[in-house]
Image (cartoon, rainbow, N blue to C red; front, side):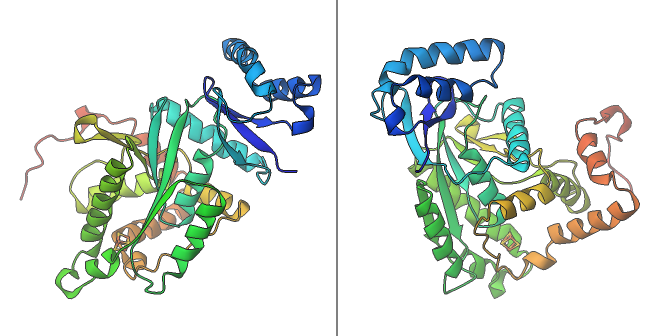
Length: 324
Ligand code: SF4
C-alpha cells in the first residue's frame, strides 16, 4: 500500500499518514509521535502541542484539512545514509543563509542535469527546520536537440511525481551559437535563459528562484571571475535582486559535485545529456580540469579555496590595481 505523507504546516515538516484502517487508533498516535521522536527540547514540545491540537482533524481520516495540505506518494523514498547526509547539509545551508521563509513560492530551475534534479528531489522532502513553502519546477529547453527527446523524458518524470511545472521549448542554444555570436555563446545563452526564468517567476508568483549550483560551481566561478573577469567574486548562496523583490538561492552550496552525482545515481533520476557543443570547451570546463589537476598534488585544494572565501584579509590586498 502506498504511504502518503502529510505536510504539517505549523511545524514545517512532513509526517507519513498511517493507513486508513488505523485512523483514530492508539497505533496511529504511536506512528505519528515516533516520527517526531528525533526532535529535541522546545522543538519537540511544540510539535506535540500542534499535533494534539490538530489530532481531531487528522484522525477523521479526511486527509486534506486545515493542518494537512499537499500530499504525495513517498513510498519509493529510501532513507539511505547518503540521503540523510544530503538532507542535513541542504537544511543547514538554507538555515545559515536564511534562504527560505514561511509561505515562499520557489521556482526551481531544472535543466535536466543531475544537479538540478537532485535539488528538486531534495527540496521536495520532509524538512525539519525549514518553514513551509511551495515550489514550481521550470525547465527551459535550449533547443540543442531538435527532436526534444530529453524534453519528453523530463516531462514524464515531472508529471509522474506530481510536480507543478512549466516547460518551455526555445531556440536559445542555436541562437547563441549563430554566426553573429560565435565568440561568446555562453554570455548570450545564460542571459536569455535567465531573462525567461525571471519572466516565468513573475507569471507564477514566485519570490525566490532556486538554482542547483553546488560548492564546486562556486569555487570554479571564483576562479573564472579572477582569471577572466579581473575581480574576486563568486555566486552567493542567497542573492537579492530587483531591490529585494526576488531572491536567487542556492541550497546545494555546501555539497560537492561528487556527492550530488552519487545521490542522483542512487535515486535513479532521469538525467538528460547537455547537448551544448560549447560545454566541453567552456571556461568552466577548463577551470574544472585545472582544479582536478591541482588536486592531484594537493588534495585539500578545493576545501582550501572554499574556506578562503570566508577568510578574506582585505588589509593584505593591494587596493590600487595599477601598473604597466
Ligand atoms: S556551455 Fe552551452 S548551455 Fe552552458 S551557458 Fe554556455 S552556451 Fe549555454
